Image (cartoon, rainbow, N blue to C red; front, side):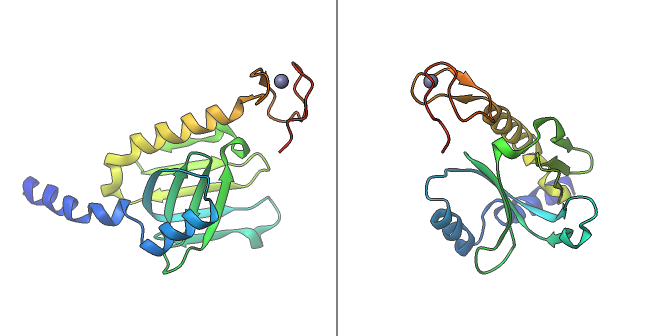
Length: 170
Ligand SMILES: [Zn+2]
């Protein structure tokens, strides 16, 4: 019986990690500079907007969560690339990232107050740790920005390097 369940999981695996070609292509085209690190299909993703603007709240089923080296993306499971979350890691509130392995639930907030709740399928649990570690690492790294000219570590919000005084706004 256990063997049978394992076998079934194996059969399901490609559907959890391999996004439809159109979504892959859409991400490549829109974010040419990004490298995709991890993709995982979710059961649903709930997006909660700022308080008092409940019209901004939305739930998307069977969505794809994508971590690139620059941002976290959520794409609809669709025949074309339709994203509804695209947040650079520097915009995430690192302490808000919570992954409940037991429930397969990931929550995180943007610094502007928007919050997201991602519920994964139970049989995706073998990927939870990888997802958790990757997301935390990327969010953590993004909090520390370095001056491209002199290499000094600078505040995320500042536009000038306190070391060499050069403009480092994008
Ligand atoms: Zn500098």
